[in-house]
Image 1 (tube, one colour):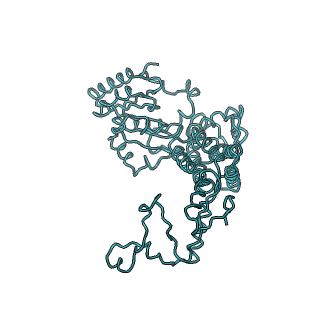
Image 2 (spheres, rainbow, N blue to C red):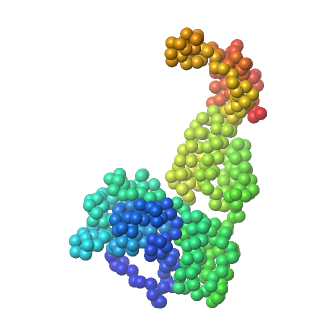
Image 3 (spheres, rainbow, N blue to C red):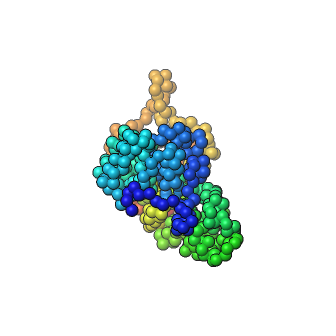
Amino acid sequence: MDLFEKKPAANSKNLSSTPLAERSRPKRIEDFVGHEQIVGPDTVLYQEIKQNRIKSLILWGPPGIGKTTLAKVVSNEVQADFISISAVTSGVADIRKVIDRAEKNRKHLNKTTILFIDEIHRFNKAQQDALLHAVEDGTIILIGATTENPSFEVIAPLLSRCQVYQMKALTPEQIRKIVEMALKQDKQLSELNIEISDWEVLLKLANGDGRRALNIIEKSVEVAGKQKENPKLNRTVFEKAALQKILYYDKAGEYHYDLISAFIKSLRGTDPDAAIYWMARMLEGGEDPKFIARRMVILASEDIGNADPYALTLATNCFTAVTYIGMPESKIILSQVAAYLAAAPKSNSAVVAINKAIDDVKRQPDIAVPLHLRNAPTSLLSDLGYGEDYKYAHSFPNHFVKENYLPPPLEKQLYYIPSNMGKEKNMRERLKKLWEGLKEYPTDKNTAKDE
């Protein structure tokens, strides 16, 4: 098909060959479902659309959430010449054709040209450079769609000329509204009086993807058979249509906590195979990958600690990467980090230390700071003995001097007792040697037990 060839309008002959997701696209911004924070009546973008002052923008988010639909709605609202190209199949020559057409629209028809580029992150630098001047002078209004973070994939000069909108996965309520609108308004489906008995299964299979939900509905009608009236769409029909079994997984229920408990205990127990299995169960059940990543950050300190300090860095980076990338790719990152945390040496010395210290603080909350540890910013405080006899560690050999840093009632207290695991083993021996005579570290080398 030529770049500018018009697709034939859906009619009685070709309507059945047009996918339901395409037939169901709204024409007005008021009928667009979801993303109220971006295009709701009180937003800047909504006002720009209604006042025909639309500017170039990039829509960033997972598949099936309405990026293409929003671009078409915007174009329809401002009555623009809508040209859609794919970054996968188009090149610089195609861009130049669009710009030439846009210049003619502007000069002879006083008409806005919207260029929609799907998967804009796949454009190379030369292709993106070819857009710059036309975007800057307003010859074309660019609407780019991407599933990747545009900060990493779109060149800075083009990015600075566009407003970036991050679009999240649709909520179950929004998916249901999209499906109900399609069932009511689509000419083919509205005549069938379709009955959906297992909404929960459909919404889980859709997993925040409106297009997928509509595709499942369309396929389910076929699976349900040749019923001319009142086809019933239930769990069995949906699973056959989606070619996928749905796992029951209530994110707010007991089973949710059972699975995360099994996952954490497997990590703590140094069993990467079990940890990855339980994680797979959660992911397949629709668990938020960021929830799993957050729990691994906590475990990295609570159960590994200074036995392998890098574990916390890796777990924190995992959460950041999962936030940027999203599913399904995030499962690879989660698997890598879970395997590392499970295999790492374990220590709970850090959590034992802070719990002991908090217990002492609660028992004796008002112990005074010893004078030699107090700050003396004025001569009056200095005369009162603040900071007197304080020994500056860097003035002594090896940057260490035996000094009492705890208040008198707690001078002999040990809070942090390094285990004999990983890097903590060296820390334990060093501290024991430095504080010999003042602090009595246990002779046993077992990991400290949480009290």
